[in-house]
Each structure stands twice: as C-alpha cells, then as structure tokens.
Length: 125
Image (cartoon, rainbow, N blue to C red; front, top):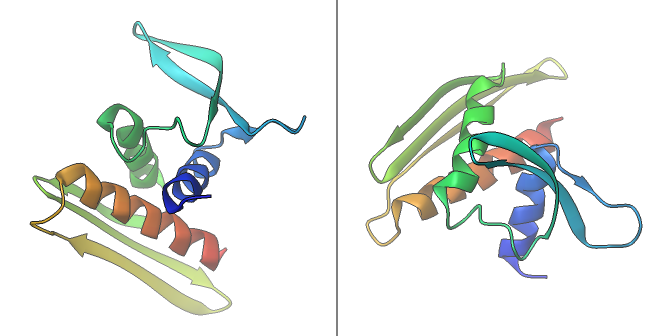
C-alpha cells in the first residue's frame, strides 16, 4: 500500500467514514452532490481525492478547525497553519504546523499539514 493510500485511509477514518466489514476495501462516504448530501458511495482508498482536490480536503480542514483542542487554523496562499494543545496524563502536548514550500503546490502543503495533525492527534489519544 502506498503512502498516499495510507494517508487517504487515515483521513477517511478521521472524518468518520466506515470501512465495510464484509472484506471489501471500500469506504462508505457521504458526499455533496447537487447542493445536497448524497450517501451510500463506496470508494477505495486509491480513488479518494484528499491530496488533489479542495472539494475533498476543505471539509477535513473545517473539521480540524472545529475541534476543541485546536486554537488556530489559517489557510493562506501556499500555507496552512494549524495550532493545537492537548492535555494527556497531566502533560500538555503542543502541535504547530506552519509550512511553506515553494516547490510544493498549495494543496500539497495543506494535505501534508492535515496528515501530520491527524497523526499527532491519533498518537496523543
């Protein structure tokens, strides 16, 4: 499995999408279609567009923004800033992502930040 597929699965699970239990490698997604939520779309991790489409990535960034541990989310041209703080076992864990790479596209930098945040959050729970 490629890093991209693993990251897609990580994001899909963060978003609450459920992997089917009958042995199929599909995720049941709820997607926007014609300005309404359409459910029952089964898709593989290879078909997920988190790294290539703002339509896929922005709902993830919005969900991160709404988390109680997150105190900062900024989306600037070519840059994603995420700041978070979590208390676990009487220890304060901080996360800060603020990256800008001229060699990457804006969505690449944002996708990378989202993946790093989700991994950090999952590791601290």
